[in-house]
Length: 252
Image (cartoon, one colour):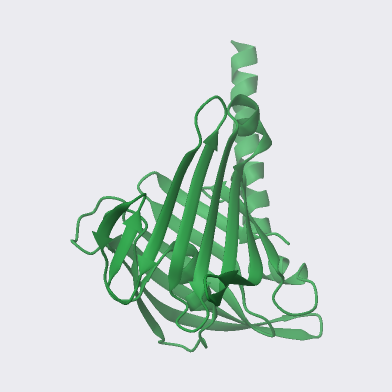
């Protein structure tokens, strides 16, 4: 009985310590103090946590620049999500995504997504977007989409290429499945933070992603703190889902 009580106390202490450490790591000043000089980096790493302090893994986003795509050249963004070492020990899972984006409209032309689970066949999905005719093709099946439809990576690129000002609104269509989703967000707050001799402008973007048919399935709310000057980077994100709070923080 004493051992059980001791383990319970140690568990409570570990949870409190983890919460304090997570709160510190997600602090905007801490993240800003670790940023290196220069413009937007080509590779950005984000740490992913549950409830802000339980480590889930990391996401790496790579800006591969301009690449040939048919007769034109397009932006290529790539993302890789991997669980932490503990989860990976029991079940090796990797998720990859690539978005090929029109350099003028910043709308996607092609989106590729794959899920790799040890011991199972790779699950791959390829989406081709015909923005002009408002149709997308998923593994040879066509679906109707709304004007200027984005995938998650191209939507992020679109937001990061906008000037941020208080009150600025975003109303975007997203579709990588069979249903059309709406991303609705507003710039709610601006802060100027001084780290040493440097002053940083950061903005709070609050929004939601939900189905256009108003179904509550797969809907979520989010908060993004974005560094606007001297370079534009997502610093932290809170995503409120049906299974709880997912926290993401810049970790370069």
